[in-house]
Length: 168
Image (cartoon, rainbow, N blue to C red; front, side, top):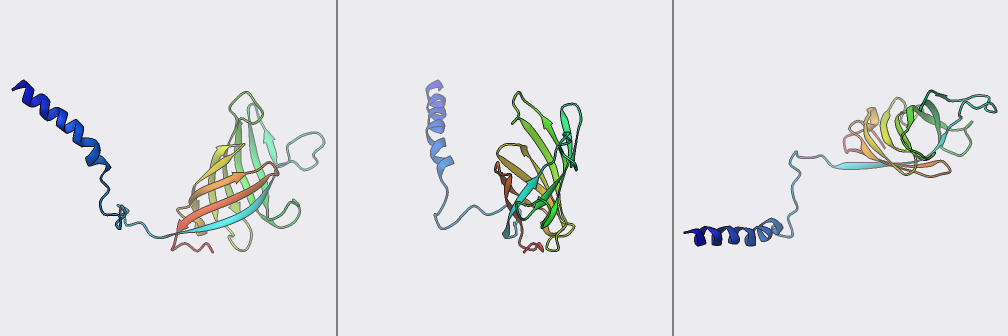
């Protein structure tokens, strides 16, 4: 009897990968279990303006504490920090490593322009690279997405919201 149970166990392990790999007919995709609504993408190209509280900076927009910095950075539609202000990045960044690039950021982008006035997105990530959008309000309700940070500092923002949102 031991050989029969060993054989059945062997057969189960032999067939298990085939059963797990079966995806069904190719014309059917896996249905969304929560009846997900269609998504739409909003793409923004913004510039981030950080003015540290250094001696040569007349109007700083951040306050440094021991190991972390409270931010109120400008978001604009162009490279000039005095024109086309779209919103503000409010939050903090925290030194988490040994190099000057090891900053963790947590911001809420509050939009002030006419297009998205009062809308927000929640942004998290490491200072150098790609950041996550993990939520939002108003036009960006239930938002998710990502921001590609470039050294300029230019932001390529990709926000995904339900098709029913007011984002255009």
